[in-house]
Length: 64
Image 1 (cartoon, helix red, strand yellow):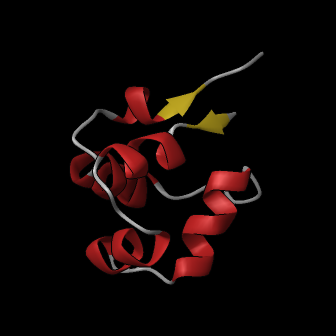
Image 2: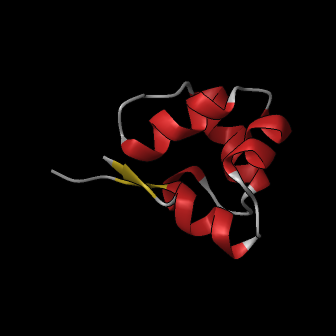
């Protein structure tokens, strides 16, 4: 699975730190999610999707 977080952050001119503060996590968590090294909870995924004005399905790309 990969994410579109980096792409969507750029669209809204948000740094990793900005996004982390908005959703209540550390910047390192955003880094790990973007790299695909951390599977976040559904609650965090929902918060990220809301801040980035997309859906959870729009935030993550499911690869087989």
